[in-house]
Length: 225
Image (cartoon, rainbow, N blue to C red; front, side, top):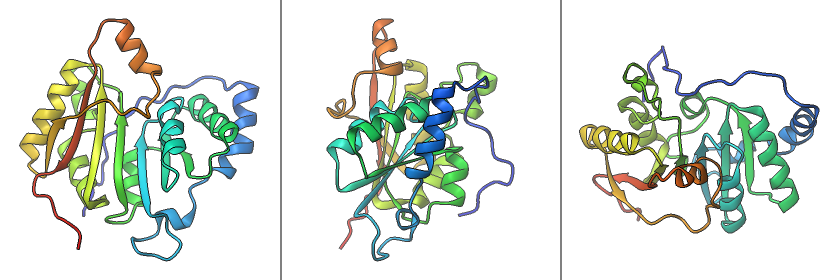
């Protein structure tokens, strides 16, 4: 598929000094948990994992580590642009001895467009993304017609997107954009049991906000032979 030349930034880069612990973890663990070439190989390539999942905006990595620990046959790629969060996740992955998780400090839209082959993902996880609450910033939200085009090409025919948010306006926005796009349908699903209660989810619940769990599936589901 064709990706627009001028891509809209869907994240807010947080700048600041990195602690010595963060620097040490990144220097030691980022190379160890680099995305293997086989994971990003075209489907059916020998040596490729049976299933590949991408988590967009992994934060401190509680969900990524929880998923990898409970899905040993799936390789999870975790992306974020916040170095301390990625460093903390990698330390937790190392403590757990996980070998089916990899990570990069990267923009997910660029990674999807430039690195992931067509049909290369079984699922995409988008947990508590930046809601960009101001109307003039809504174009920066990760879910958009352009990214839905991109996701449709990068997911397998039976692939899906899991979305969780504690912002009611964002949930309504996702439902509306998905319905208007037409390639996917959005439906409510139970909270995944493997996702630890942490981060923005915990903060949202503490603030009295409800959590919306959605799965985006193809409007016309294509069954594999």
